[in-house]
Image (cartoon, rainbow, N blue to C red; front, side, top):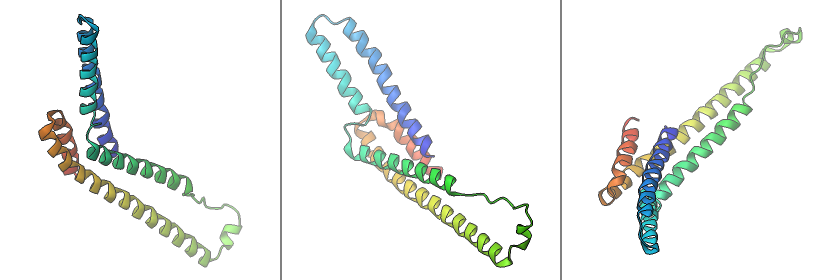
Length: 163
């Protein structure tokens, strides 16, 4: 779900930069003075800043928090994957001599580790969902003033409602 969210944000930025670049390029080609070039360039920069959410600090903080959670989740997942050791059954005669107590202890460790992994994943998911749900109203309110946010708000709210 996190990848889905950031894919929408990245696509939104690409949908901002490319069409605006084509528009400013065309306008600059037809400019009659350096003042017109500067004016078109300033318009381009301001429009890109607005449409890439760089002028909405509250929204930017939420997106940054979501990104941070995703990075922490990825790091934790990587750590968990490398820390999980799959125990292969020993083929030597020593395995037959292993006591029942050692086997029970090993099973208990695996169950405890599995429980900790599950709890960790649920905690990340819970925190991410809380942040995502708090992003929806901010986007909706901002979309009233900035119509280009409407599509992003609908995507975010759609993702939040799918949970």
